[in-house]
Length: 164
Image (tube, rainbow, N blue to C red; front, side, top):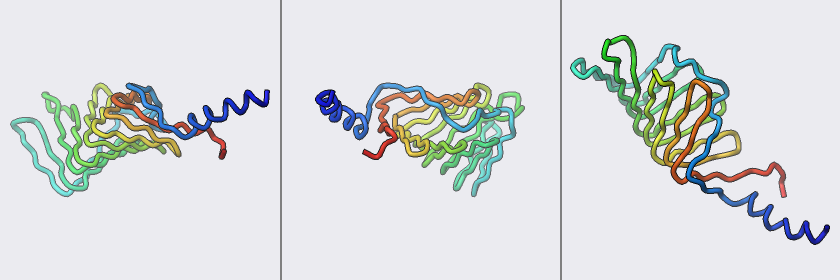
């Protein structure tokens, strides 16, 4: 038995300390589900509106809040529904940061489809959940059920919970 433990120690060490890479992974995101029917509040340094295309562009220190979810970026384009009855989607670029509960994710870009209740983050995505971190090229968050899927070079370090 003692010999068996010595054979397992190197494997346990590798699992404890090495990154794990995969093509895709399903994870939970956010402390709770998000009510996508809540009002969306946007603050920024500047705003330009184009009535012909039904868009508005917020620039500089953009902060978007909807319930417990917060999203910040350098620029956010708001696309209104064709019938002018509210927002259809948000397109955030430049240092995008999404926070929901204790979970946070950053990326180069995020597209939020209000009706579908999905947020797709792209480009060097890094998600943190307490002491754990996952990275990938894309993360799709389903805000209705609080789940996320990461794809494209997914990497994480598994914490075993002991100090050895």
